[in-house]
Length: 96
Image (tube, rainbow, N blue to C red; front, side, top):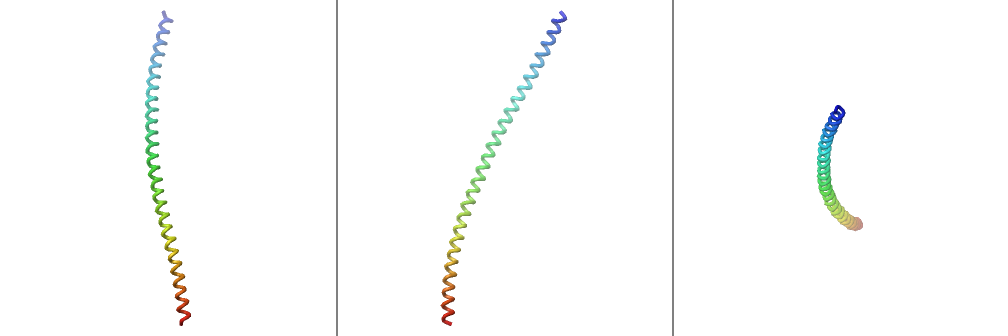
């Protein structure tokens, strides 16, 4: 009987330890699910912010191109005006 008692005690200990292991495994599965949900949320938020950043960059790029075009137009007009002023200045010098 002593052996049967030892076996029963060992079985009870084994069952108890198995239950504790199952509880820990359940908590780990819950934690993993929570981490996955947080990672998905972070990826979603990161994607949203990245899209906003790229939209802002695109808008600034468009504005920069418009400004560059305007500056090129102004420089062209300035060059033409300098040529006209030089021409008139040369004529005025010749007449004096």
